[in-house]
Length: 568
Image (cartoon, rainbow, N blue to C red; front, side):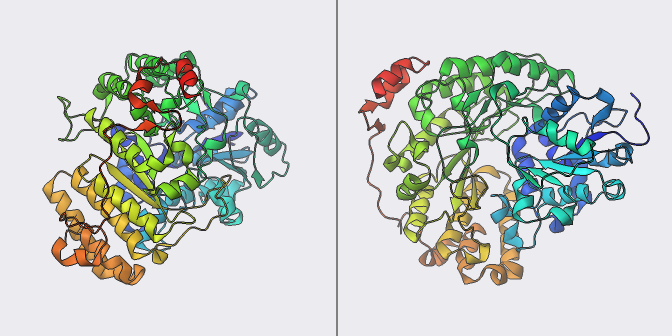
């Protein structure tokens, strides 16, 4: 297909860090939101991005959001008027005829949750790689020369408004929220030369506006659900209506991804266990979940099927579901660890939000995460749930949030207690500093700077990192390199950046002698425990509000109807 040398009417693009399928593991993409660009010269990571293009310069694989916008526009404009390309090919398609450029933004400024620790630990001006790659788009010579309208959407679009970066980046309009219902109108206005609103907050799209594009997306992403329902105060997707997309339509999207060369299919969700759920939504519909994953995995050409976000309580509600999913999906995992009992050492790694070890703070910010259990048993829910997952070779990535509004030193100690209880489990921890996100109940909360963290908060972050390091980095040389790197960072920069409260937590991560540093820390690793004694718990939790044993919940029909009768 040939294109007018005057440019294409509408051009869609995204940073190459959001289009890479490096290692067929979506979690590897998270690294680009963490590593400061100034400490990672572009030539070191560029070879790993490897953006795939067709001979005509259009992109083979881009984020799902761009595919949705492409789908909407091509319903109303000729195919030759809408092109999706990588930033390296913008010069080929942007010209005097180009009316608008749509940009997908995951972390355009670098103020997302993960950046709060993983980039800013090196200093407040340390811009992460994916923000640097985003800026390369906005400052691209073709955009600066021809001045098309620049429309930005995606999970990170709010950052441009929050930092008032419109003029600096040359952005005309940001869409904060789901774009299906408004994107056509905005591109039509741009086509007509009309002024665009700087910020658009679209209403939630109607069911008939939801789309499952038949084009290849990064990691073969297909959106299996929208919304959540657990009502966490720091999260925006939970405020959306909970919807499970049609299995047949999703499988068609899987086939389309494979036809265009995709080998990985990543069904994404705020919680994989709500797929097909009825009432109550927190009782997994095991039949629907297994049917969906079996349909995806059975498509010829699918080699890898990663797990998306999940909650921990469903593992206790239906341990048998975890076992059946393991039987089905372990062979489709690209992840391996010697701790796995699978013959090929494969394991599954969903992203699970633990967020805090404090039942008090959990009750204030995320009481729905515990359903159908009592949030006062939050630590026990986590410990017992992780044990079930680990037995089935699920080694989750677990997030924690440090500095939630209202967090006290005792709350941090309870999070450290939870780390101590989980010290022998197989987990990769991702602690982050609280960042107030738009359209959440905590949007007006205050996020801490790394310099403001207390000694206990640093102890939590660096103890979590140390436990992750000891589990996940199995090569002794690599493990040692990480520890020596922390020594070097602390003495060269860290002690000046973060103050005296950073010292002993950093030395713990670096592998210093525990006998020498433990008097200065709350958590003791030698068994002499500065942590409070935690009384032994029953081997299984009880759903306290109706006295329903977990074993009984697991026996209930998977459609949830009987579960509803029991719980009511």
